Length: 126
Picture 1: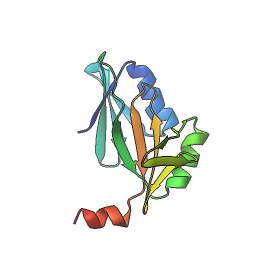
Picture 2: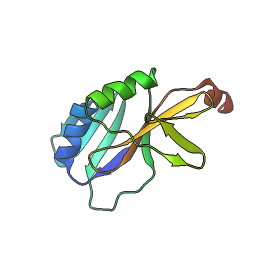
Picture 3: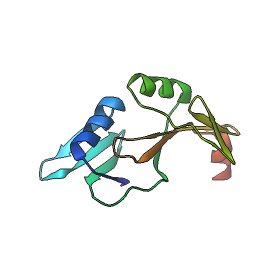
């Protein structure tokens, strides 16, 4: 199960449920953890005081990336803009062949991404 460290569990639960629109369930025996439902998969949020990294913690595959970016922006999510060697975003989205990705930070400063499921990447995984 993927896990993401958070500084403030209540703030993180609000972000994942209200801004991302996901179902979040608190654990009855652990007030410092919560499960985010992602279809049949789960993501564990847990309270930690360790420093956050700058890499992408999780990437969510979506059917319509542009529509998802719009919906999340309407919920107050701010997408990162990059102009680096190999990564340049336009309107919050970077394009790599037929793969598109947008990055944003959660309420705790963890970097998350949404991406389409490109045929090019799936061919390389075969």
